[in-house]
Length: 357
Image (cartoon, rainbow, N blue to C red; front, side):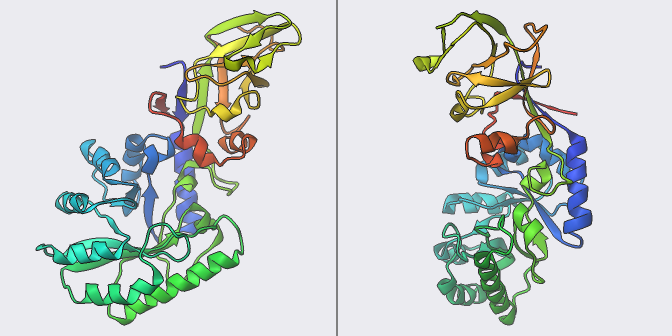
């Protein structure tokens, strides 16, 4: 096992999935989000875990992520939620990979194809101003799809801009708008199997009678606000070098840290190329033997230096905890630099070894 390892607990994944099924998604379809390497947790292994669960789709960002799952013999159905061009659409259709239509021109392109029964999910923009057909395009989209029997909307969805805020008037407005869009499709005779808007925060804070599908991401990995969730990932490293500083010695690039007294520092083999944010330089903490150790100087590409002056009986090989479910969560680490836990876990690069227990 490498000196720096992301350890994923299967027991935490089981806990989080069970909480979802029993408390929040009874009788709902589940699109489990495994994009961005399953939020850093390892898309292949997480998908293998989810194949044994009642999940309708695995959600990915693009065709490349979908092909990675396919090439690793993942048999669960896959839904592309993000970017896809015309050539990729044709490839996805041939490979039986579900995709999202998020632009009216894509509907026109599909209508021009000499193919039968093209299934897709339609994304509607209700205020995120990102992907999705606009509200003023809904009527002509309905007409275009109605006039082509080979176009089949299997799912329709939107994305909530501030679902993490309870009782958000903007979110309620988005939901009302989306409900109106779905009603318009139903009135024209569309029978849509998957209707969804709720990401992890939406699952916790909002619901609608028309939603029959949820899209858990961070929820599965234990990084949402629900207290019963268990973070699945622990990020650990090891001390590979111990140095003694005298007063006036500096540490790392730019000499941004200068010792004011005699100190003992440890060098750990993790840097910003591994996913430890450079913004933690001279600011963040890690843990050694249960005690906080400050990051000294700038986080380097491959290495980081920490203060171990007050840690007794320490030696090379000593375990260092970057974040876990006890001493310091990914959310706590994120708050140190005013970011979100997504940013932390998604940033753990593929050169960091993953282990699954």
